Amino acid sequence: MDMGLVAVASAMSQASVQSNVQQAVLKENLDVSKMNAAKLLQAMPSIDANPAIGKTLNVVA
Image 1 (cartoon, one colour):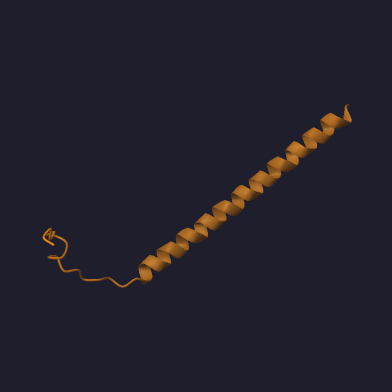
Image 2 (image 1 turned 90 degrees about the horizontal axis):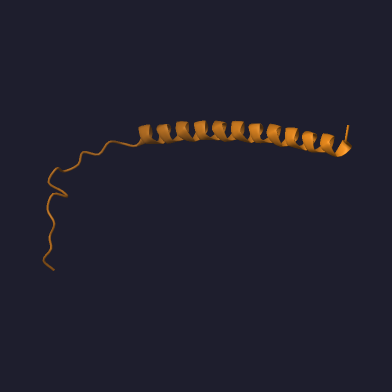
């Protein structure tokens, strides 16, 4: 068997494994980011907004 072909096949296999590991790490980081965002939103206090604010626009300068 040609040694160059073996080297190419080995390199492609290593690249595939590396890609799979990178995808797994990315998915884990996205999950952590989702959890952090959810915790941040839950920690925010609710604000009672005045319903009259934002309904009119003053166009006179």
